[in-house]
Length: 121
Image (cartoon, rainbow, N blue to C red; front, side, top):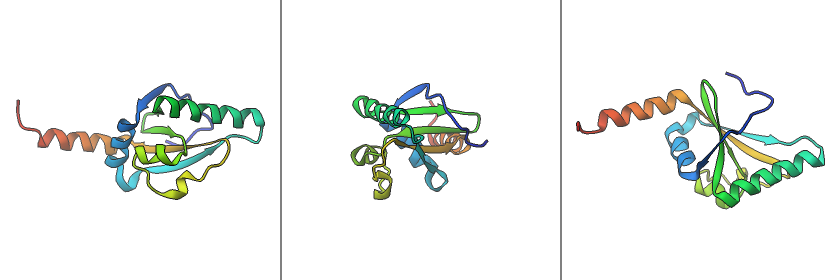
C-alpha cells in the first residue's frame, strides 16, 4: 500500500506504544519527513500539531490496511522518548513532522512470538 497525499490522524497514543512498535519493527521501519507546503498557514498548522503532541506527550497514529503510521514531532527529547536516536532526525525544519511507518505483518509476528513464549494459564 502506497503513501497517500494526506492522512487523517484520528488516534493519539502514548510514546511507549510507538516505541514498542518501533522496536518490534527493527530494520523494516521506514521514517518519512512530511513537510507542509510553502504556505505560511500550512507551516503554522504543522507547528501547532507538533506543539499539541509535545504538550500531551502523545504521537498521532494512522492505521491503514497494511501499516501503522506514527506522526512524531522532530524534537530531540521527544525522539529520545520513542527511541529514535539518530541526531539527523531532530534537525528542525519549520512545518515538518516525522512519519514512522511500521508494517502490520511485523507487529503480528511479534505478538505471535510473545504468545508462543507465554506459559499456559
